[in-house]
Every structure is written in structure tokens, then in C-alpha cells.
Amino acid sequence: MSKRNIFQAFFLVVALAILTFVITVGKASIHNICPYAIVCFGILKGNILILSLGLASLGIFLGILLMVMSMFWGRVFCAYVCPIGTFQELLFMFSHRRKRRQIPYYAEHKLSKIKYWILGINFVLVVSGFAWIYINFCPIYALSRLPALAPLGIITIMIIVIGGVFMERFWCRFLCPYAALLNIAQVLGALFGIRRRKIRRNLERCTDCGICSLYCPMNINVNRDEYVESVECIMCGRCAKKCPKTGTITIEREP
Image (tube, rainbow, N blue to C red):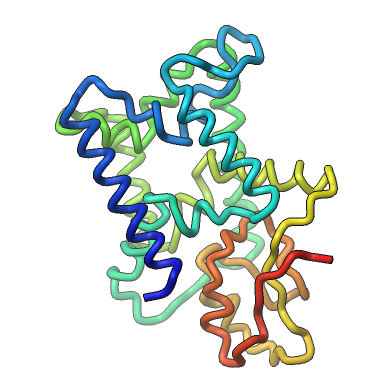
């Protein structure tokens, strides 16, 4: 078991424990501590730019903190901490797919834009005072309401499960609005001159076998450039692990 797997297992257990507590207590809100709260509520309340000190204060704080972290380290939260991401990896692994296939990169690029539309629509809903519409679709919120059913949230969970069987990290790649927010944070960080850590391919050692790209859970063309510039990269390090030539792929801060 790798270090990343240990982190994933730990945070998955923590997430399940918190979820069990919220369901058992009944009155607690999962959004109090969930970083996804920044998507559900934003930092806009009453159409004034303020940090919410109410229902989701800690959750929004965590959401902002992870955005700042992504400027320096990329989307490590998605690879090491996020329980939905871990669940999707397990789901895909146990679906017994004998041969890995990836969709064409042009299709990946177009489909990955959907999550930005979801984020944009939700932003409008939050500003307009209709944040509850997206909250009803939130998979975390739906799980926290068990055993009661949140029909729209259950639909989202079904999409995550069905999509995750056929495509690894389906939700992360195409639909997750928080992933879109972390991507935007990385772009803003680059505009301010912040050099984040990236996957680097040693061009002299690389044989261009393409194994790194084949096993990338985010379907990134790793063996195209020296550094992986895509903000979709979750820094999981699987490309380095699968590479037949040890030391060819590393994680470094771009000079």
C-alpha cells in the first residue's frame, strides 16, 4: 500500500465517521465542515462579499484554504483526501475492467468543461438567493440526510456510481464544481506568479511508450510535454509509479 493509499484510507474512514455522526445526531449540518460548502453557499451572502459566519463558516473556510493550497501544490486534495474521489477509484478498480481504455483527448477536453458550467450556474443561483436548488443536488448533502431520501441528490449519486464504473473518476473529470473551482484557483495562482509543483518527464530517459498517459486517472496526455501543465492533474503520482523506467517521471516545482 502506497503513502497515498494510506492517506485515502484514513480520510475515507474519517469522512464515514463524520457522516455517521451527522446522520445519528440529525440536527448537525454536514456543510458546517465540508469544503464543498463554498460551492453550495459561496462567500456571497445577501449579495454582499463577506465570509459567512453562519451555517457553513468552517466548511467555507476549508474550501478557501484548499483553493489557496491548490495554487502551490495542485489538486492534491482530490488525490489524497476527497472521499468521493477515493470511492470512484475503488469503484473502477473493482469493476473488473481487464483492458484500460481512454476517451480521445478532444472529447475529454470538451466534456471537462461541463463542470465549469455547473459552477457558473450555481454561482448565479447563490447570488440570486436560490442556493437551495444546487444543495438539493449535492451528493454529500443527500448522504447526510439518510435514511430519508433526497431524490435529486440520489440522482447525482447514481450518476457518480454509474459513470464511475465505466470511467475512472468520472465525477472529478466532468461534473464536480469544486474541481472547477480548484482549477480556477490554479490559473489565478499562475497569473500572480506562483510556481506550483507539477509532474515532470525526463525527456532524455523517456521512451515515449505512453504507459503514463494510459494509466492517468484524469486522462491527461502526460508524455506530450516535459511538464504537465494541465490544471486537471491531481498529483496522484500514478504515472511515475507505472512508468517502466524508474526516475523518469518526478514531481517538481517548475523553474
